[in-house]
Image (cartoon, rainbow, N blue to C red; front, side, top):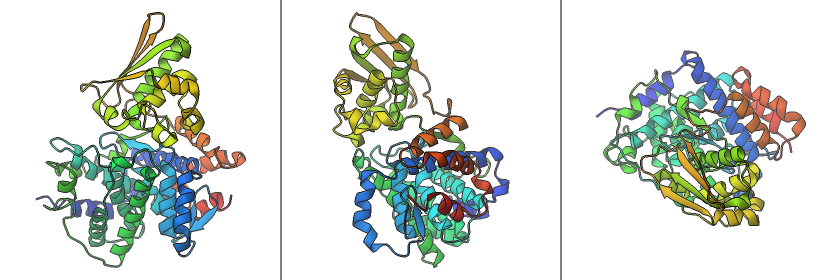
Length: 450
């Protein structure tokens, strides 16, 4: 049996930032800019107020900043809150092969650690990249044929906890054996299922993973032990979360190929499997100048995963349910000719014209379609039918968001509650995070206030 856990630990400990290809380092910067914007955009979500009301009285020394809230807490609660914020608008990144959202659970704990100990921008970025890389390689074990992972498993959580542990352990400068334990302790806490979708706990799941990963690293730093084969062992992580796990997928090309380069960023604030349908709807109404009243029905042909994850809520009752509803986003796109933060609000969810259009949306499953593809037809009242075939949606690996796209997305989220006169300067400095002398000082300078 390949010692996957130790091999990944050895790689993480030995890795040097300067040895990473420039494309990988820049992708780390893109991931950071994207997730920092997501934290700002979701910082005032209702679920966070409730989380703090329940837990803040138990917080320890206020060492870390709650991004976008002007408050401080201990590093565990700060990790929980910031990881919750990044997912609140469903605008985070996605690794399409695993359907994980890798950056949030990794960024939150190392932001907290950076306020507790000296951490340079290069060190922070290196840890972020490693946390993303290792968790996605473990994720590949679960989904690379012949492996199969149940659709109900929340991969952003069960993988995110591993990424959080690896990144935190790297910043804590742990040795190889301690890294093995950190990974093992993370897998021991791996949990999360998709039945939490469309509720506040949908965002608590990756938040708890982030906190658990930090706990794993802190325990490992104190020589708190666990098994040596937590991932590959006969009763370990891989066998529990998949059938016929493909262990070789974790280490193949380790150090020469980089999973972060397969990461993608959302142009729309909703489930990633909805995006191809949104593209088709927007393309049709804009190209043909179609008025909503002229549409008899909207026909979406999508892949099985889209149906399984986002095809079961035809009439969402609130914004959280709408974030994972194909019906809602197709309706909002054709009625409002947009698919941004405004289309994910309670106001849009209950707008009569959007509600009426949702009831005209029809879904068909096509097993041959890729997850970033869809066919959209608008059947008009005058008998005409206009159709769009989306081979690869915007934001996919084939059609990635540019740096300029990510900057625009960042500013749009920052505008929710961050001073507009500071956003541009903050954005420029975030793009240069590797040059920052002290990440803790960067955080306090920009976020230690309302």
